[in-house]
Image (cartoon, rainbow, N blue to C red; front, side, top):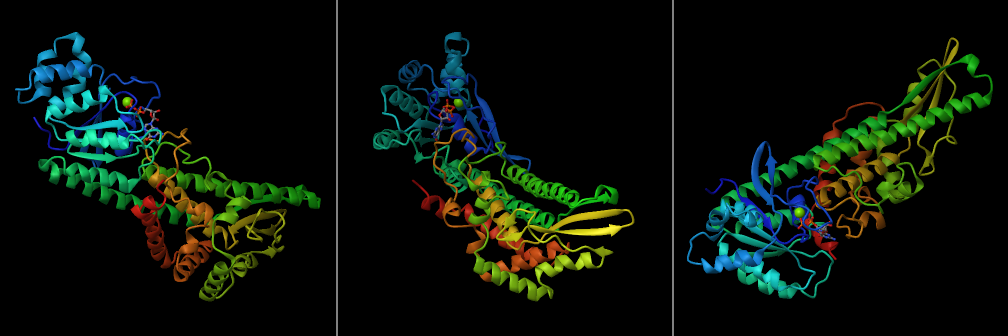
Length: 478
Ligand SMILES: Nc1nc2c(ncn2[C@@H]2O[C@H](COP(=O)(O)OP(=O)(O)O)[C@@H](O)[C@H]2O)c(=O)[nH]1
Ligand SMILES: [Mg+2]
């Protein structure tokens, strides 16, 4: 009868937030969440699969339609050992109870219960009926207070009523819950039935391991983005006869510049898509007010993220000392070796990052043509900006509850928005770490692999771990 893995039926009345809770707990933003009440008519099973194995299952139920009738029957048959099973067995053939049977079916088959209530509403007689009938099932049960409209005056009443009938009562906001809150809720499931302790522990362990793996993947994605973006170049050969006037050159440069900038943006977009996959998101944007929605090469982004001027100067000196050349000379170096060097069109054309051009032009002459090349990025600030943006994006993806609809902009953000007010993540690293990153960036610009890549991966991973920590949750809690 009882399945090996924990199975939990999510119950409660329509619009209490059941589907949202399931979406968040299973990290599945495809769970259907609808504003209209009672749109779900059947139970859907949402397994949590880690490494090909189902570790826990949640069953999204349609919600009670006729709790009074069920309770009356339960009370009349209170001698029975397993009321949910007995009820389903007695009413299966009766079309009038089709809905109630479908609702109680998972419980009849041994599932535990998670009751979801909207703790922001006054507790009603119907709620007490539901609470009592769930108590009578005798199943392991937890109640979740999902506070839909952020009203706290009824919470005490709910706590009182629920505590009498449930093994565990927890507040859980399906729209704002972070990774660590999910883990806490799962851990609490251990206590509702001793027989589940090991199973739930196994599920939680699998979650934690999987999260570690995803953090690792995210760090890899970010490192790869930096490597590719920093060695990125765009080049184009133009016949001499198309380059009669200065304006012709300028036009070519403007086109290449646009292509270069767009290329960088696309690299970031592709990396973000990977980050979403790591954290199982299908929604693309995580907040409308975020610096993430500004253009990568905009002034706002440049001013908000990256290192301070002083930090940058220190990193620049360290990187220069390590490679034997300054960053700017390193870029000029390869063009000097390659045929006629017309000189870098210094600045002026590109969007400036930190008062310095993003990248430089190199114009090489061959018989009958000029080859224009732009890149790699020479601006020392840009990689730190890109890294900060990637971390911020990851922080969003990691902490964005799957039950939260992309359109829902009212819910307060739990993601460390300190970034917005207090500059980027890289600013808070130690100067040794910043220098390590600087060395990696300098090497990436020259298309070289360096030992520091491994160290940088570790640095990035540590930062990512930090943004999913519970202390951040509580610091930003409302
Ligand atoms: N603000 C807010 N809205 C929520 C929360 N949980 C659910 N909702 C909204 O409440 C409505 C009903 O949620 P749903 O999960 O479909 O409830 P169900 O009928 O019990 O499955 C939807 O519009 C949800 O977006 C929450 O934690 N905060
Ligand atoms: Mg639903």
